[in-house]
Image (tube, rainbow, N blue to C red; front, side, top):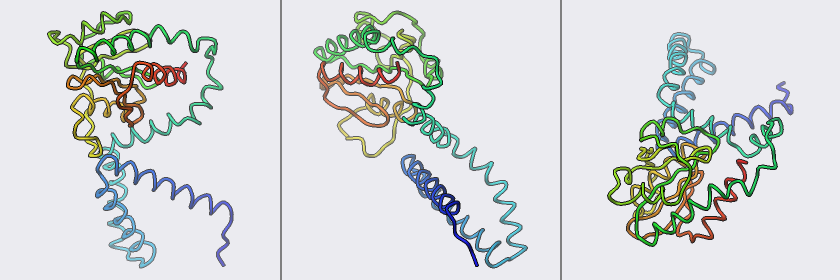
Amino acid sequence: MFAFGIKDFIDILLVALLLYYSYRLMKESRSLNVFIGIMIFIVIWLLVSQVLEMRLLGSILDKLVSVGVLALIILFQDEIRKFLYTLGAHQRVRSLVKIFSPKHEKQKGDADKTVIMPIVMACMSMSKGRVGALIVIERAAPLDDIVATGDRIDANINQRLIENIFFKNSPLHDGAMIISQKRIKAAGCILPVSHDMDIPKELGLRHRAAMGISQDSDAIAIVVSEETGRISTAINGHFHLRLSAEQLEILLTEQMKDEA
């Protein structure tokens, strides 16, 4: 008789969670049909090799499975990277890491104002003048590959500098500005564009680029619309639209305090 214990329950629960998160990940990346095809193949493989015990067909499928694992890693490398990043960026995991991290808690709060206020003031000024802008603030996940696509600046964060970079006649105004470690690292950078069908159609390419970088990393993306002058942010794959200066300041303070 088969004995079902607590270990078996945990085993089934973990497999179910793994399949659920894999399903969500594939659905977001528009690879759901591929995921369903893989699941059907696994069911057929188990049925042939374990239930029906067809040796010849089962051995062929065994070979395909062993080679298929490597093929899946190559095919879904972006999705796997995102899954592992999401796992590592989970709030509870990061809280556990912070316990063993030798950071000084006294550097929270006021230190971030030197970063936040010039950005907020620049966004307000550009909003009034209908100047389009896309600013990305790096957090835990490094954006070195994104920085490499633009022109390096490595300057202190300054309201006038931000406005001059996004001035309509500036050669760098079409790309994204990357802010890292309280400095403007680069401008004119190219971001991954999100193809999420749920993004409202009235939002343009800057918003799609902001959503793309927020889905691929934990960065904060700030968008100033050239058409409407409205300020928006994309954080962890979610938009915060039509923000006032006060709302933008509060949002940045809360988000950046978590990284302090």
